[in-house]
Image 1 (tube, helix red, strand yellow):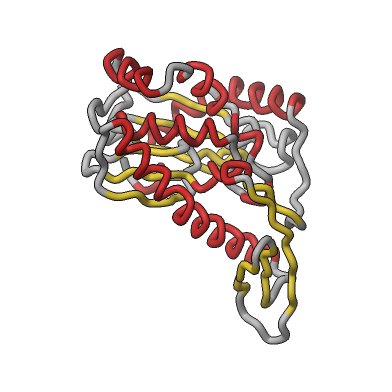
Image 2 (cartoon, rainbow, N blue to C red):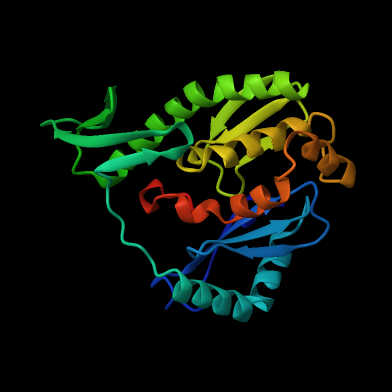
Length: 251
């Protein structure tokens, strides 16, 4: 797949979000055919098999444009777009902590830095730059996730007997976590906003991929050994994008 297919700016019905529809393209080793996923906040992802030609992706999207526009419109009616606003408070339900955010403008600052003082998060620098503030907040979320999730994952690995080599924290747009063939488990720091039960399930799910690198019946039986309610939790996790604040800018 050529680099041109990584992101397609195609013009469909622009009334839903008042901007052109931007389609991200993700190549998947597991994909056997092209598919399209529309996210409730309007983002559209096209999943393609390896080595799919850009022209084929564009043709596939064009063929399904009417469905995409209709689905985005339906989502917009159910979930009206939320205005962007930098947070004054941040609730990280996964770890049971709430933070107040304080913004300190510093003259001639070219960046925004963060520091955590107990339950207060201080952003200092050019805080008039909203995007710079978001980047600082996301760096902070990543640091909290690394500190909080590492011991939880290690404990669950010991409990389940499912090994891994290392954990990394990312901001995936398409999944809550992943387990690579080299033994690296990637955890989405947006899990910090979710119910601890969902975080525990996600970790068990990814750890179980150490035994089965697929979603076969054997894999789900292995998950069920450690989380009998996995079906309900998996369903809740699929809809949990709604709990991620707009300012994070991922979902």
